[in-house]
Length: 77
Image 1 (cartoon, one colour):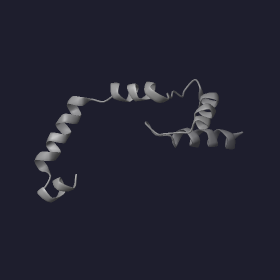
Image 2 (cartoon, rainbow, N blue to C red; image 1 turned 180 degrees about the horizontal axis):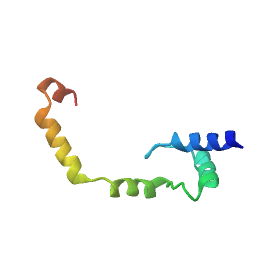
Image 3 (cartoon, one colour; image 1 turned 180 degrees about the vertical axis):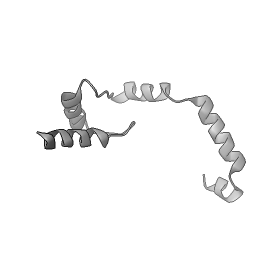
Image 4 (cartoon, helix red, strand yellow; image 1 turned 90 degrees about the horizontal axis):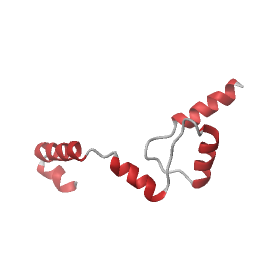
């Protein structure tokens, strides 16, 4: 029984926010961990990602990067 729990914990801990999974894997995860797992597909998923982007912080981060990056590195990005 402990091995089963360890495998389930490992399966969940390997997931990352924004990770792409197959539809089959999505169904398996929802079936096994429906109460603690949340995922979306298609336009709904894209909308959730966009709603969570902090545009002001991203703008400031990019401005700082532009200010501090050397000319050669700036040309690469």
